[in-house]
Length: 340
Image (cartoon, rainbow, N blue to C red; front, side, top):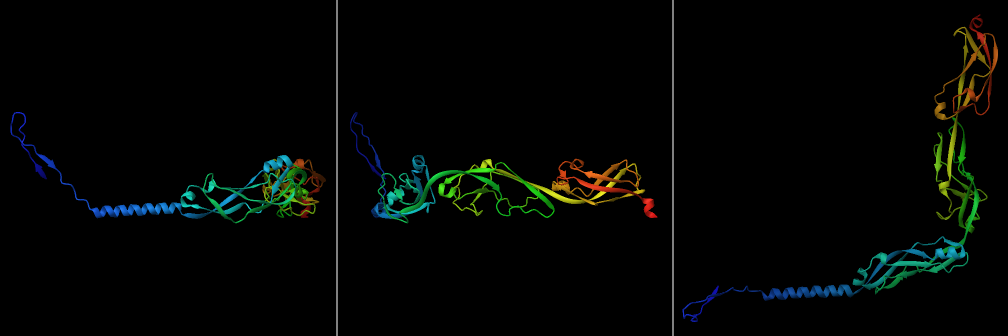
């Protein structure tokens, strides 16, 4: 550290000295300064060139249909069967400009509001670039879209429930019945397609031996020959929430008959019958618990023959004789006579 001193004779002429200290400055390497400057300059030049140079970017856009509501309101028509739902474009611009925009800033549309007749149409795809963007479209994988238009038509067709051999019951089951919430369905769609439909059906598949209920049924449609009408999904509209189907399965089981006679001691008599079995119908779960059916008689003597008519009233709830009565002739025999 360097020191500087001088004499001060002012005032009362007293001698004195003032010491001023000065820090020694650090030596800065001039070469390092030059190198840092050059690096900064190179980074600046690189960034400027990267941002201004032209580049391309490929973007895939959904094609939005414009004017379908106008077409419906003015002409009562609808469009369907578009051959594509997306278009891929290549845009060109500076790197800086391209980085400013997201894919959602671009859009592709096809305007159908000027259509006035039914049939096939080919219309151009219009691409909208971000507002104020200094970009250009250099290529598109497709410039047109093809689709069809038709008058919106409504028709009521019978609901036949089944298509093909949908219900397969095990051999042990008796029969099934179907309860439908509706007998007819109102359908809406393009007239040419709706004209082909003659019936609506619901295909029931799988194990239904215990019965099943179906709601919000998705229907299939058949022509006058019973063949399926093929069409794009959701092109035919109907109120699925109003449609339900219940499949009620009735089991069948044949069980042996037995006889019980009030007032007669066991072992002194036996019965012979015109039939030794009876067939019962009903809930398969209930039938599974039944091993035989017992006919109860009262006031019958040994040696007497009686006719017993079996009706559904003699059975537990949910079990029937199949809708008709069963007649059984019963003869009460003496065990002693049979042993002679």
